[in-house]
Image 1 (cartoon, helix red, strand yellow):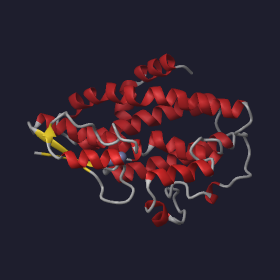
Image 2 (cartoon, rainbow, N blue to C red):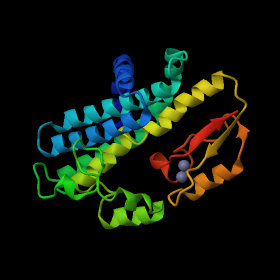
Image 3 (cartoon, helix red, strand yellow):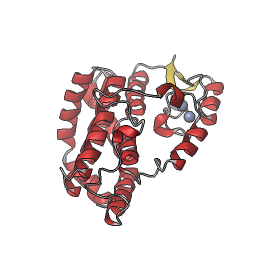
Image 4 (cartoon, protein in one colour):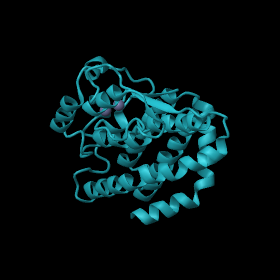
Length: 254
Ligand SMILES: [Zn+2]
Ligand SMILES: [Zn+2]
């Protein structure tokens, strides 16, 4: 599907999305739980496609729905009850603009891999459990998370490339990529919700606080070192930094 079709589909379903997002936010309550839930759903979706439980069209629609609903739910968790509907309206165009263009491209790539046989439907030769995928599969044993946390984004990128993980050319790597639409962006959108509230409350300044670990990227370190800036001058976590959706900087206001 092209960009315009996806955008118009999303626009038509907007009020459904808002309602579903409110339910989701009520259920998961905190951003980390929402993220974990969406990681598990990413894996479930990709497995469903691989195992032919769902057709391509349904897969595409479901990813679109879940991407938008989870982003909205994350905003809701940031906004809480502070004039929720009005603020959520302001989040919507940002979510659509941020998520749908890359999602369109990602879906087209996946379709190409399926059509050309890089990804084979029904192929169960690679077990999802062989990868330290998401650590979010209910009942899964979480192995090696400490090691992964210890490496910086450059090393991580090289490792991903060597395993063919980053391109979505294997089923497990596809699940990982799907989670970067459904799950990891919830952190940035949660922060967007908080930002809407801070703006309303009249805070004048903001600063980005980078996580002080080996994984922090140069951009995030620089934002952190800039210190206080007028509200609106610093990008939200995940924006303007090379760690993108994996950014875990937080914002303080005063
Ligand atoms: Zn960064
Ligand atoms: Zn960051």
